[in-house]
Image (cartoon, rainbow, N blue to C red; front, side):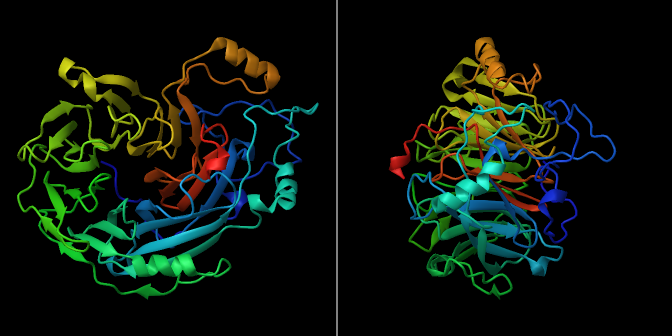
Length: 474
C-alpha cells in the first residue's frame, strides 16, 4: 500500500549526464568487460553511477510539469489509431501532489516532437574494440537526413486547472477523453470536462510553449462526497460510455451510471465485500456489467452489478496488500495483480472454479508493485513498476531457448553474458526514475510507454519490443 510520494518537493530539471540511467559514457574511460547489472543484486561502489545505453531504446525522453504527479492518464487523440513513424505527439492528463493543498492542479498537456529511431535487435557490425558501429553516433546523422524521425528537443505545452487537494488518481473516459475523473485526498471524487483546454492544445502552434504559469479556475461537472474516506481506486468502463466505479480506503465501492453526457446517478449504497482499503478497480473488457477489485486484505474480487452488492467471486490473491490489477483487453480471461511484497501474479479466470487459477507468478521485484498494465497490442506482454525504481516489461510467451542464446552470443561475440537466474520472460528493465508510481502503454503508438515518478515523467520505447502491426496502417 505504498502511495505517497517521498519528499514531494518541486521537480528540478537535471542535465542528462547527471541523472542515473540517462547519461552517456565518456570516450576517455578505460575499456572494461561489459556485464548486465542486476538491481537488488549488484551494488554500486562509491563514486560509481549507472549509465544508460541509448541503443536499448527507440525513444527516450524525460520531462516534468512542476510538482510530482502520483497519477496520470494518456488521452486518446485523432492523430491516427496506429502510429509508427517519428516524430510522435502525445496528450496526457495528470494530477499533482504539491507541498501545500492549495497549490495542486490538474495538468492537461501535449508533448510534441518526440523523436526516435528504429534499431536492430542484434547489431549488424561490430568494431574491433567491441563497440556497435550503428550505435549512438549514427542517431544525429539519420535524423538530419530524415526529418520525419524528428530533430531537436520535444516541446511541452500544458494547461493547468486548480484542484482542491492532492490528486490520488486520475482517469480519462476512453470514449470521451475530455471527460476525466479525479480522486482527491480530501475524500471527494470529481468529474471534469476539459474539452476547452484540449481544443486549445490541439489548435496551438507547434512551436508555442504556453500555459505553464497560468492556473485556470474551473468548476467540476459533479463532486461526490459519499465516500467515507479518501481513495485511490477508479475505472471507466471501456464498453459503456460514462459508467464509472470508485473505491475508497474504508472498503466501499460506488457505481456511477450516466444520466446524460454531463450528469450521473451515483448509487449511495456501496458494494461491500472487502475488509480493508480498496486499492484498484478494473472493468471487464468484454462484459459490461462485470468489474474486478483488489484490496489491502490480500483479496481480488469479481463483481456483477446485476447481482446485488456482494462479490460473485473472491479469492486470496497474495499474502500482502494487493496494490494494483489489470485486465487483459486482448485475452479477457487473464487478470494480473501486483502486491506490496513485490510479487505479481497472472490468473486465468476460466480456472477459478477449479481452485488455483494462477498461471504465472514472479518474485523479481523486492519492493512494492506500484503499477501494472497489459499491453494493448500484445496479449502476452505487460509492464510493471515498483518502489525499487524499476520499470520492467515482461513477455509471458517467452521461454529459455539455449540454441537462440548461443546464436545471439555468436553474433555479439559474447560481449555481454546475461545472468542465468533472470526469468526468461523479463524483456526489458528501465531505470533512472525515483519513486515510480504509474506506467501506461500508449494505445495508439505500439511499444510506447509513459511513466511518472517523484522526479517527473519518462517517455520510452524499448528497442526489443517489436509489434506485428504493419507501418502502413498508421
